[in-house]
Image (tube, rainbow, N blue to C red; front, side, top):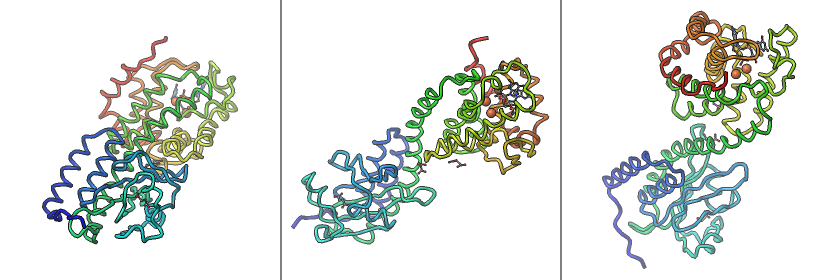
Length: 374
Ligand code: C2E
Ligand code: SIN
Ligand code: SIN
Ligand code: SIN
Ligand code: FE
Ligand code: FE
């Protein structure tokens, strides 16, 4: 029989948690963070190894990139003890793995490791959805068995892990989606209204400044920044004769033009990517007005999603300051006057305050990404 090390004291545990959390907050790399979280779980319960499993909903698998001592493992969702725990949303403690029919021996077979005991705890995102599980394997302290106390400790780690990982996933998704967006844009063809490039970039930056100024989190603000450039994607469905008309649109033409909001929404809202869903909302609602006189649904006030209200300000500020086929750019003073007049009419009054509070930064962006042609 093996000799197990003594159990950690409560003080040790507190120190362990404190040190890990301090360390993790400085890390940037996804794999490194997950690995460190796995280390934390392992040390909290005195396990030999710990694994962080993540659910891949699209592929219907659960996977871990950073099991201690092993390369990436991917198994069908529902398989093994970890699959069970994730499906049921319940923790599972097993002290004799080989005598439990839920245990999937193939992993041991692949790695040559011998699993004695396993403790698995699902963790959830902010919406309470199970997004993965924490698994500790082989107790190395105390009696050599996992106890209810260990379960409690791992549970605490899992609570922390869930929120940490859902932000990480979002961040990761943002990176992947960035490529997807660029691809989508390219596929759709050059934006015929000639508003590409810097317009889109400025709207993105303004939106983020306003979101942060409003007190939204860094992550939500970044989500908005990534999504807002797609607000006019529905314009690809507008005929050239309308889109590129040098003069004022007549009533019929403007009716066609207004359809770009709903077209954009239709193009994007089926996606299960959070960023594209946010973009769908923005496309749909960026021409709504606070006073209920916008389009396409004549929503008013806080019925309009905050992302739509923010993008409206960013978009109009930029549209007015830019040359369009149908108009010349306005002077800054004229734009600012319009914004003062439209406070509580076109625009969310609270956001207009945020806009003026952050005007220096906004003008800095305007200058940094100014259009080079003209
Ligand atoms: P856009 O050029 O990106 O303009 C976005 C929004 O900025 C407009 O939404 C409007 O709220 C504001 N905006 C832009 N220019 C002016 C302006 O000269 N005066 C004022 N008061 N506001 C301005 P809106 O009006 O719903 O228009 C949506 C889109 O329809 C515009 O996007 C543009 O592509 C097109 N559009 C609007 N009016 C005309 C027009 O007279 N001629 C042409 N060819 N297109 C137009
Ligand atoms: C499982 O059955 O949960 C997988 C076992 C392991 O990771 O060793
Ligand atoms: C999360 O689970 O909250 C982030 C990942 C996603 O929205 O797909
Ligand atoms: C989203 O559509 O995912 C963002 C909505 C929000 O969290 O405000
Ligand atoms: Fe628009
Ligand atoms: Fe625009």
